[in-house]
Amino acid sequence: MRKEISKDILQKLFTTMLTIRTVEERVAELYSEQEMKCPVHLCTGQEAIAAGVCSHLAKDDTIFSTHRSHGHCIAKGMDLKPLVAELYGRTTGCARGKGGSMHLVAPELGIPGTTAIVGGCIPLAVGAALSSVLQGKRGQVSVAFFGDGAVDEGTFYESMNFASLKGLPVVFVCENNNYATNSPQSARQPAVPIVDRAPAYGIPGVAADGNDVLAVHRAAGEAIERARNGAGPTLLEFRTYRWKGHVGPTSDIESGCRPADEHEEWLRRCPLDRFKAYLREKDLLSQHDMNHVTVEVERLVNDAIEFGKKGPFPDAAELYDHVW
Image (cartoon, rainbow, N blue to C red; front, top):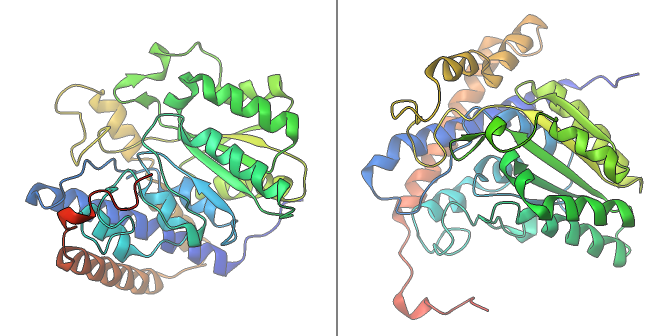
C-alpha cells in the first residue's frame, strides 16, 4: 500500500520546484548582460526530478551530478548565494569563482562536486557508496544524476555491474530528456528503454513520468529506502524535457535543432503547472499560500543575485590554490 505524502512534504516539493524554476529563469534573463562568463546548462522543465529525489535524502547522503546541476544542488539544500556567486565567478562562490556553473560544490551538504564529463558522475557515486560501506556508515546513500547521453558511455554499464556485484547503496537516476546536445536518443541508441538495462545486472529498473513530481517522489522513495536498508542499487528512468537548449539561455528551436511542435507539446506538460493544479484540486495549498511562497522565493533569488554580483573576483595569485 502506498504511503500518503504529508502536506509538509507536498509544500516542500512545491517550494523546491519553484525555487529551481525561478533561479533558472533569472539566469536566462541575466545571461545577456555578459557578467556571467561561464557557460550555463539550464534544467528548466526538469525540476520535478531533482525535487522528488532529493526530498528523500539526508544531509550526509551524497549526490553526484552533471554539467546541468543547478536543480540538483538546490534540491539538496545548497544556499543560493554561493551558487549564484559562482556563476558570476566571484570568490564568494562555492568554488571561489573557479568552477563556474558546471562545477558546483558543497561537501558539507553531501555535494562533493559536480562534473562536466558525460557519465563521469556515475562511477563517483558508486565509489562514494563503496566508501560508506567500508567505513560502516549504515544507511548512507549516494545518488548519481545523469542524462540519456551518459547511457552511451561504457562507464554506465561498468558502474551498474560493480554496484550490483557489491550490493552498494547507490541509486542511478537517468533524466531522459531525449537529447544529447541536439542528437535525439533514436539516433544514438536502439529502441530499448534505458530502464530495461537493469535486469542484465540483477537490479530493479523503474520508469516513471519525470514531469510528475509525485510519481518521481514515489519511485525515488522506494529506491532510496531499498538502498538504505542494504538491498542494493536501483536504476530509475524519468522521461522529461529541457525547455532550453543544450547550453545557454535560448531554446535551440529558432536554429532548427529541435522540432518546434515537440517543444510546444512538452511546454504544455510543465511539471510545475501540473503540480500547482493538483495542489489546488486537492485543496492542499491555496492560491494565497502559493503567492506567499512565490514572493519569498523571489526575495531569496533577488538577494542571491545581489550577493553574487557584489563579491570580488579571484586574485591572480590564487591561480594555483586548491589545485592538486
